[in-house]
Image (cartoon, rainbow, N blue to C red; front, side, top):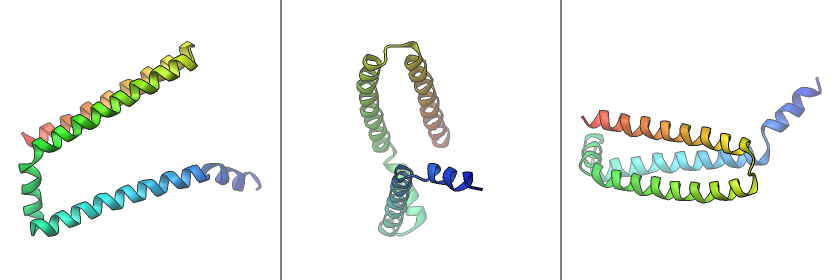
Length: 116
């Protein structure tokens, strides 16, 4: 019986609570931005139309965001490779990089299919 409380304490640490808080804050900010946008546009259809008209700007924003993320990843990757020169760290990095590229291709592909 004593293993269960210890297990829950390990799962819900302060770091986990902070991460959950940030997820909740970001989710609330996204919802608030959409609610404000719908109010400004006058209706959900008006908001959808505005989003479609400005899709090019959102594409540029995403590309800039991807570029900044790639630069940060490259910087972090160099530091990690210098600190851990063994092959294990390199294999972990490659797996994460492949997964990230697959996710971005799937996301952008789904957006491209929606636009078509």
